[in-house]
Image (cartoon, rainbow, N blue to C red; front, top):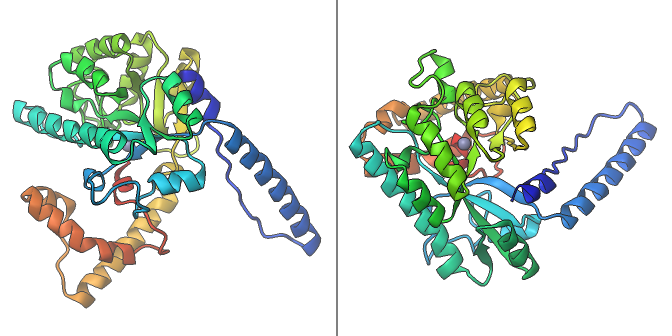
Length: 353
Ligand SMILES: [Zn+2]
């Protein structure tokens, strides 16, 4: 699996700089065309993977699903069009309370997402996309002309304190898992601890350390995107297998706690791991992203005054019953869209990377 992961990270960013003369422009254009042709050739010749695609299970029903060109960043028509072979679909659970009730709700959410991905590959579109459990599965499916789904688990919170669930998740198709998301889990501290300097485990908890051994045992890669630096360094030291960061940036280029600093990158290199870059705006350019968010908030305030609605904070919405919160965020969506600089479609679920 790692070989494939290593083979793909081919990202090209094309920038058009204002030319100082018509001649320079032509030369730039020629160079860009050449670079683009080279990038496209590489893109077509390798098996391409996107290692982190968030999903919403409402897009995995018989009536509404990824065989349609939905308003999501990834779906089957878009994969075909963009030449993406493998989509790692994500079993994501937001961090909640570290209680039995919290673990039970998280587990239910995770199973719902596992089931949705199996539904797509087994009932909705098995003729178009298959679930891969190994790198050989990936090669076979690509050879058959099919698209490929793989499963990553974002946040180990749903395993609760029951380590046997790691094997269960492996049996359900999970091939990577992160031990925390935003907020400390029972397994590991999160990068978000940097905001207030409050840590729960000082890296991995004892349970988290045992989880690493279980993941190694059952073939689930350890994903370093989201846990804290200490958690990550400890995980790398403990893991007997190479690790990955499924969607992370470089902290030396953008100082965000979600990004990996040079010490972590060096440790991943020594471990033989792979980092897949993420283009989420606040991890690429924090300053620009903060300015943009402030402007969006300003536009939203103007809209609220004009259209006569009251703005609620995220914390206020989170306290509401789930159905009400969902109803409100659905009603809010068209207004949120109007605060964006372009009409380009942005997947709603991508907004919390
Ligand atoms: Zn994420």
